[in-house]
Image 1: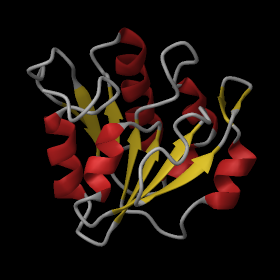
Image 2: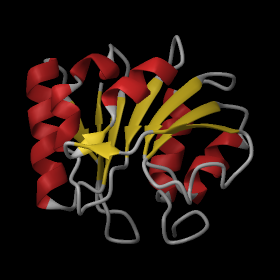
Image 3: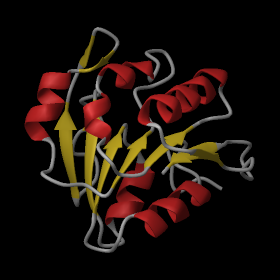
Image 4: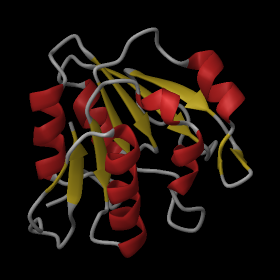
Length: 157
């Protein structure tokens, strides 16, 4: 069952983040929702890149980076200027489906050498993105089983 509202990660994604990001560690998330707040409440720092001003500041404990969509992806200049110095994991859960998430392919430096979680891999576009990221990063993609809500995610280690 999703954590909170309909714009949330599944419990399985939440659990994977908690395994990969130590308490007092840092998660960099592209896209935000109520799951973002659930993670922040565990003592992990969360930097959430968000294009929708209505979501910026929606929950406490989160460091929001407002980056409007430019050329199909978050404004990379804004993202780079506001990134934390170090992060332990990246969650790609945005931008929304109407924009697509393939824009990350032009900004691979943001993924550094940390695990990358790609949500919504039940969608063909995210499945293809996961395979492409795994190939260019030369790191394995471990897909999840179908969750109770019919979703999938993958982890690039």
